[in-house]
Length: 205
Image (cartoon, rainbow, N blue to C red; front, side, top):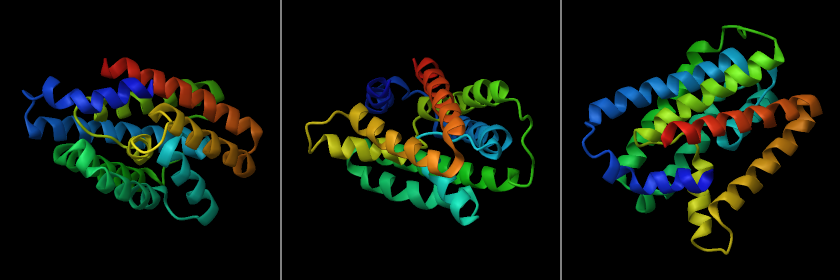
């Protein structure tokens, strides 16, 4: 699935050149807000995390009591700036815009409780909403996860593939979540991760 997403990053300029920049911003704005809703209204308050920088941000937020939006912004931004020469100016600008909206959205929704405590609803609806939002951001030229940019940079210098690097990072993240949230929530997080990324891959094809 990561191969398809990274391939999409490289060819998106050719496939979507007819889409105006304001229209891209509008759809990325909507996609980032969907992700913020999925995180704050379904996942985070039920101790369910996503992979990548989002997962790390949730864990750090839980450990420090600092809002997750702060970590999303601080941790993601350096990776996208590092990836400037590989993925282009427009990709970086759109990605930074998406991260700003996501960080602001999670801040606004922080006071609100989870819409449900039902694990199945949290996993399937939260994961689906998360995947739809991330897929919308990718489809219109941006990204919300700096770990994929990091994987691109490392794959240029090692024998590992982008997918292998991202999966290694995510295995570390989900393993760490066991210590913070417990084994059951880590399993819920893995299922949510699978649903979200299947939704992403479906939405960008």
